[in-house]
Image (cartoon, rainbow, N blue to C red; front, side, top):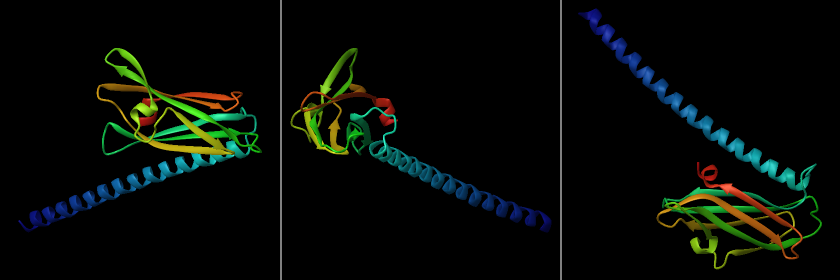
Length: 176
């Protein structure tokens, strides 16, 4: 009977140790994921600055560089960050405007919504820019009920019309 009691105590101790080990492993994995994400973000930032300051063989001029989306507590509301850059000739300022459209579907019907229609932070669809190296534009948008986003189209044009840059960002690629 005493040996059975000792075995049970040993089993309880081993199960407790195993649970502590599982908990420690989960915490370590979570920390590793956070560090990997942070490293990925830093590498992206370094790449961004390298492309601006030392473009190598990249295409020079005005570029729609990046569009990031972050969810908010409201599932229909998203924060956006659009980054424009000038690659190569950074001796001059570049100015112009950007048009942003959210493309998606209501049922089977394809729709193209101008940013100012879905954003409280924009009064018209043309976002003015003027920068030497890069410019970041932040804001928010609310997805209309029944609208299924597919992509975001961004078109930047300089004031003189000589340079344009267009990019389309897939919604799924930006929101996971």
